[in-house]
Image 1 (cartoon, rainbow, N blue to C red):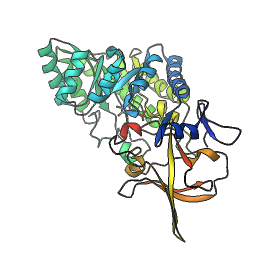
Image 2: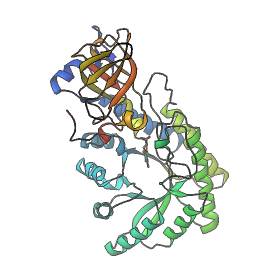
Image 3: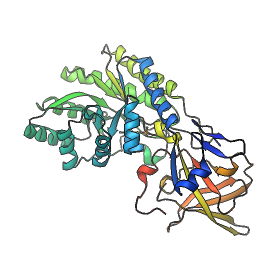
Amino acid sequence: MMQFGTQRVSADGRLEIGGCDAVDLAREYGTPLYVLDEDHLRANCRAYREALAAVTDRGLVMYASKALTTTAVAALVASEGLGLDVASAGELRTALAASVDPARLLMHGNYKSRTEMEMVLDHGVGRVVVDSLEEIAAWEERCAAAGRRQRILIRANPNVKPKTHTSIQVGQLDSKFGLSILSGAALAAVQKALACPHLELVGVHSHIGSQVLGWQAFAEAARQVADFLAEVKAQTGAVLDEVDLGGGLGIRYLPEHQPPAVAEFVREVVGALLARLAEHGLPKPLVLLEPGRSIVGEAGTTLYTLGVIKEIPGVRTYVSVDGGLSDNPRPEMYEAEYHVFIAGRADARADTVVTVSGKHCETDTLFRDVALAAPRVGDILAVQSTGAYNYAMASHGAGA
Ligand SMILES: Cc1ncc(COP(=O)(O)O)c(C=O)c1O
């Protein structure tokens, strides 16, 4: 197994998380079961805060709650001093139910519904990231009607394509997100927003993708944003005070995945931004970061009960578990891979190659050609790094 947070193998070879025996947890609460390592989650929040504080005294970490949205997680992350990024009415409601200060919330989305816009204004959400020209007009109209002034950032598309699955590359020109710097759309959006009396344009946002195992593409995007801020100043005279560099740092799904450490990632990416701004003679902005996966991903483990073993001689052995794409759609959506092992024999040699299937109709392949330690019916299968984009993407009505 990969060593994350409080996870360890006990003297009798069983997986423990936070001092709890994983097999006992599975028996007590039933499976499929998401287990979250609170200490690990808190440590990741602190790692981001400390890394940002090491490069700037004007920084704010906003947890991207789309990665895992529950009231408990929202409250926990807020208690570590992070703000929250929300991207739907549901995420906003969850953050409010967890008593997160609305001023520390930031609302995202390439299509914000009427309800979502009303909620933002009713609750006094601190920042909105605007994603289109239509949205600027819509906010101005609504804010004027409500007698409010809303703080906004423009989501700029820097035309940077990070190395990751195509479904989660969003910083290239051909993307539904943001307004292109290259085409002039981002500058047009800034000019339009500056002319709106009910909008307070404070900054620019960029997010280029997710599960990226390096910092170079983010540093390039940060430099593009800095150049754009210089262009904004030259064209409009406005000096924008906030830069949100989004999220996207990858995690270890498999032992061979080697993401940079949070400290290195933040130093290189925020460093690239600040250096380029200084070259332009621009002042140090408030820097926001929006990590999701790298806060909660490795802190989560899913436990399943192995129920059926079907050997097709000379072809393949299928092992079926009591969950599947209803609790983790990522393998079917974008061939995501995971590290799996038998929780009760965590340090035994994995010598049997099987394909782990979910219980649902459709093919529902979870983990293709993975090695397990002589799997038996009734074993508890542990899947690491399921904290992000599992529960949040689950179909809550279709589980076991
Ligand atoms: C705008 C925005 N910010 C932050 C994130 C979080 O990304 P990650 O979970 O990869 O850190 C996302 C997710 O893709 C996003 O769309």
